[in-house]
Every structure is written in structure tokens, then in C-alpha cells.
Length: 72
Image 1 (cartoon, rainbow, N blue to C red):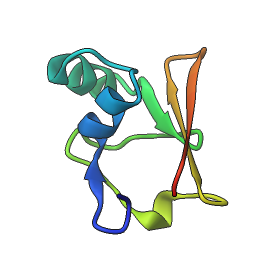
Image 2 (cartoon, rainbow, N blue to C red):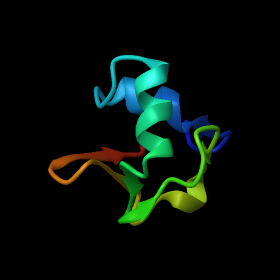
Image 3 (tube, helix red, strand yellow):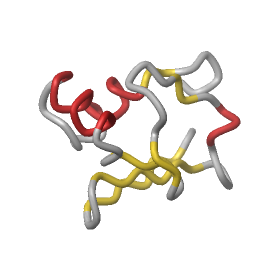
């Protein structure tokens, strides 16, 4: 999945963090989505293998909602 890259909006929807593309774009624009404690820079960001740490991706929405996505 991460070898070819996946856009951040699709990843957020699959992780259950957002319900719509508009919500995802709004949150990213307001710096409300983080990957490993770094804000996602733009809504068309592509998540690649280089973004993984120890085979996992930690995504945070706001202050309290976390998802740890493990690559297979």
C-alpha cells in the first residue's frame, strides 16, 4: 500500500478519522492532522514508505484522537 503511495485523504477515511473529503481538507488546512507529530503540509500529500517508522504510521487528529497504522 505505501510502496506506491496513498493520498492522505484516502488514508484518513480508511482509518475512520474523517467522514468526508471536505472535512479532511479543512482539518489539514487548519493544521489539525499530524503524522508522527509533524503537521501534514498540504491536502494532496502522498504518504510513502519513507513516512513509516518501525513499519508503522502514527496519525493524530486534533489533540486526542490517534491511529497507529501498521504496514503489512
